[in-house]
Length: 191
Image (cartoon, rainbow, N blue to C red; front, side):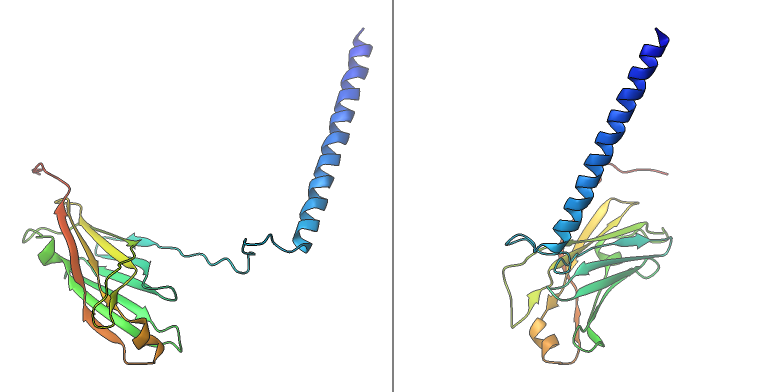
């Protein structure tokens, strides 16, 4: 009786192994054939796919983030906790060099208590402004800064002209504009 179960078990194991190898082989052939064929109409190939990533990181005294300025360039944002200076540096995609540098001071806008060390957080997000002024349109990103001690937040952008950059003009050096300022914490916390 045990022999019958043993032979049936081996039969099922063998059938499963053969079926698994057949499916695996068919999938391998499908992948290889798929790599040779052209992509479907309207779908980009992997070579055409451009990823756009935003990142941020901070330490005890300094934070850094990246965000898109327009279709071709991104900015690198730095925040110095000691001075409250928020900078954005944009490299020129046509030959390198500085295409723009923008600055704001978040300490005034976030009302950091004198003598208290701020606990800043920084991140960026995309935003498509519809209005422009004197050939300048706001950058396609906003930079958000929060003070973890108070719960105050501020949002900034800056004017950007891709025309000036593409013509090889001098770098754009303008102040950042405060777009929004608010509080996320409504209760005072005592330490």
